[in-house]
Length: 415
Image: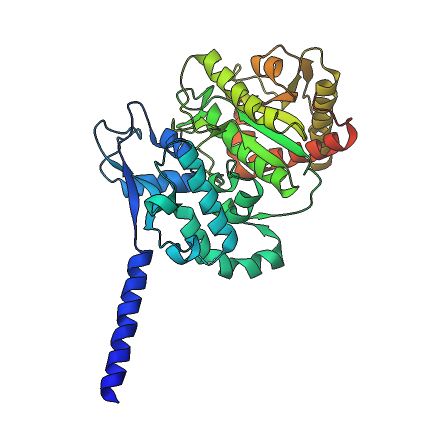
């Protein structure tokens, strides 16, 4: 009997060992072409353009990336893609992923790369199955998260990723503290919002100073933009930022450190002259707009003005030249902020203005657009509006409320 037990035990060990070999995977290693960077590689391989993949790439390639995130010529780099030896049966038993929907997504992703000639052969022929690393991560967390998410109606990165069908997953860029979003309703489910934070990358925009700290327009406009995007998503909206920062989520600091590693919403590097950079934002918007004309589209542009230090200004608005819908839309946002000030600071008053302006983003937007200036970055009182995180959240909240009112009253038209 003892001999049989030992024999059976040995068989179990061997089978377990063989199973582990089947599930063993290595990261795909490639040599980038001249001029390719981290984001262009992620885009080329149809990977999510978010901080998790950006940071994973850096983790996999220590000492191979410059301080400004440039890649070196003639170096090989590991991508956040795991290579499995296909067992000839199915993806689930090959990878250990037991979720059928995830397995289907992996299959579609492999086909997409094969069609693009990135992958030479179908995995069933080459016996080489590629798997983006977040699918393995999603599988490991799937069961433990489902019950909690259904009970609390929390949107998680995995769920939103499925809903957006591969489009940019915004939840990854909000930062850890704000990565879960409590769904309120679907009031804005038929709308797409493009939020355009002013400047970014090599251009910080207007610069002010307070208490020895530098205040950069692009950082404060971006933080308000993230907060606004998150608010709109709570109401079921589809949201795209024309500028994203892979490292800076929503920050609850007064003084936001400047960085120049922002990229366009499609992951491309911010380069060229000022007009080229604006055109790139419009091109990104047009690309999405042309594919999703069944929805209502809105562009919200956020900037911070720069004037003489003694000139205090309230949040003010520009509308598209000769466009009554844009004018009415901006007017409702302005009135919402005015009413909020009357309630919260009845003695303060509000001097915000609304005028027509022939600005590039307004002139070339394919949809209803509004341009908003949040304050004077040189003025000490306006600076408080910008540096206090609660104030930045209040701005986002009031703009969100105005948007809800505007899109409930204005005739639903793309223009």
